[in-house]
Length: 353
Image (cartoon, rainbow, N blue to C red; front, top):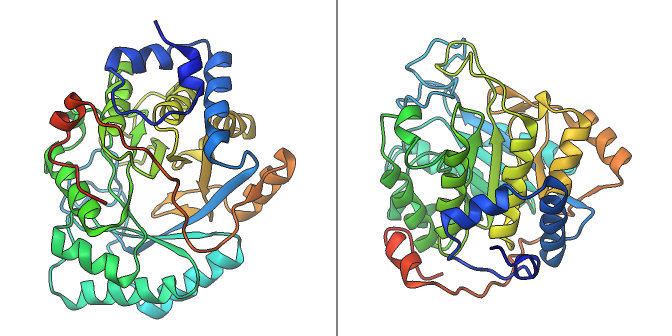
């Protein structure tokens, strides 16, 4: 039986079982949201939402076959491959993002992994430093990286590296066949060792069963320490991808996923990411109540649509929310208490930070 008082305490733990996580997920939604918001307010201001901007700095032509991705070279989606943007173009976009209220700027490149010791990677490092000098939190998502690349990104000024687990280990092969789950864990290990914070979440609505959403949350929860940033994406169906005709997910399953993530990873910032164009204002408000405290701004997320700055400003005004101010990154203090089972499950991930 769940100890609701303990759940509401916001204690950082790494030993919730899959059965316990499912029991949290299955709580009556009023109780679930109340618990999530109670926990959330122990670590974050209740009326602040971090505004983040995601820019595709190298688009299309990716060798991976992720079933949800319009940038995969395996599918015909109408996305034209484009080379790496210039440093000047990236900095211009970052300045615009900051002017529109973003405090975090994320650069995404459609690579399986960045080309090693190349002019392209050097150009990314130069762009990172230039954007960091604007006073923005810098996040990159460039595919799989090794320790050498991770340390170079950290030295250049990357605050967070995004590398999602996407779904449960059991469902992973139904979505991606060009890499394995362990590849993702190895990248996260390199990111941790380099001293960057981890941005790691997943996608719901890909035809997975509820147990797969629970499995994803279990994997994220067992990472020690927890990812500082947990993006929860709702599938954006793109014509030409294998998931183009996938059934719509019940929005309450999205809300439950966010709330459960907030409760079992209380010091992590849960991000309401892709899929907001399909959500009503009321649905987004429920996600904020469930503990989401970040959104991506602008009218595009890499190559898929996003509500746009005007729509977000109107929504924030209606809800009485405000953007998190820009400034030096601050990370919550955490007490890491690992159980023996957690250490065993995550030996490929853990690193001293």
